[in-house]
Image 1 (cartoon, one colour):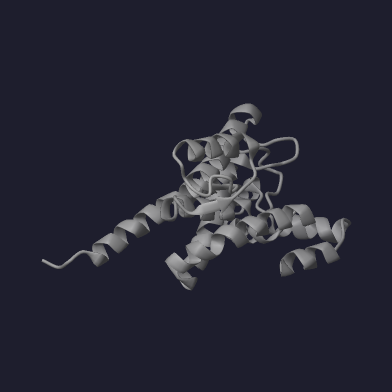
Image 2 (cartoon, rainbow, N blue to C red):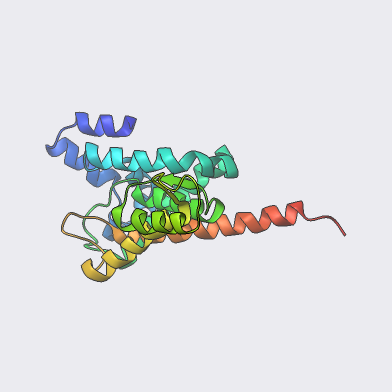
Length: 213
């Protein structure tokens, strides 16, 4: 958020555009100048295209991030977040849109957080008002006599699974990037990275908890 405030202070003129292009992830630049451009695999995740873009990402990070951090620990979570941003950028660069257009936003890294969350906390309750999901879910809860049946919550696997399905559908319909510049492939890449890391971490924890020979 501090980086965004600085970015916003530069305005939409030449200085602001230069800041975005210098620190956003531009796939063509990584190919042409890998040593100079590699830091942008992470720095792009601290830039945003506007206040709504920032607040949307921060809401998801606020809801899901702290639980994943509790499981991984502070340092490993920071490395995981940076790794998710980098993998998301690389997947976007390989499969996404125009390689000369800078990628900005934390959504790739936060997609990694969602991927980890669905593995670690699949049954955690998520408050959500998505009519297409909540209506059949309420029906199932009434049918199975779960109480309170009327509460607008979904299990994390349903909420995040729906989100992931929408990313895949958007790739199929929009080819990886919409006219508004949504980097669907970055979301998918980050999500897959998060699920992979969470599964590896779960296996490590099970080995650590297993009784010795």
